[in-house]
Image (tube, rainbow, N blue to C red):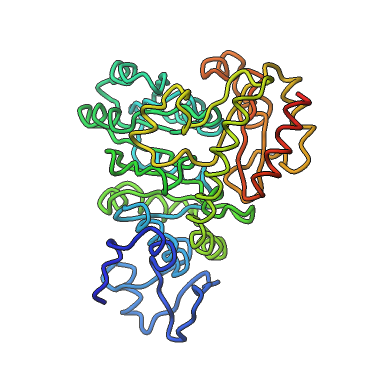
Length: 394
């Protein structure tokens, strides 16, 4: 083939990347629902287990459908390799576990999804890993947190739930000087609007449950890095601990990738317009959207993001006002999910971040009046009317 897939536009990568047709020449990607594979001979089985012969061994290690998903996402991301996982949190856990051992130290921005913070503050210390949480936008805080045993920097940007943005390039420079690896959770930005590997990160993780599926159907996750790091840090860990993505879910996610660009671009256009309307409403004390000049890290967003993406956060002053807003919604769903074709709003203090103590919530600026809105594919005028009515009720 004279075409180099690396030269394709994102739209073509999302449709054609990783496509591996069987002898039947099917149009849609094949769903291989099998646990294991057979061999022509015991010699062939031995060679495949030794890695001397190409082919699949067991679905826990990989399957043709899962590999198509991995190859397509890697091509979109500009990564050498991708390994899929059963969920976004499985991917986060793997990304950290593969790089850490007892006695190592992690530095992370404190504005994190609740489960990510639990892994870092509760789970990792059980195995002798030290963790320091810093103010993500404060570059000097990252530098000051480095210790001789620092091995990983973990960044979530934009962060859940208030869309705090960290400077990936600047933090990666500090990490390189400390001989540490940088992991970026890129789920809010999506692969379309932010490319952490090009900014200096070593590993990118996704909850494919979100925009990649984007239609409320399946769970999935992914880790992306260069081939050497995937082989050294993650290949055996994934093989032996079994966080495998099911072939069925991989097939759904493949079909989701085909429309990812169309969906996210439309959602982003609507989110940008709605953010302006929300910010202008008299009941709203503050509004956060990466594409607005009043975002606290707008300058960083302009440098490292090519779009504002699909999430908006806004403060209505109190939990009572936030609940009045949520209860008045007629089109937008109340749900803790995001990146879906359906618009969804949630109250982070009582859902996604409820496990954080009040003091920990306040550390990231999360007070009871904040609402997180994930903008979907409904008609922009319908969403604007629904939100205006609910804001009035707040």
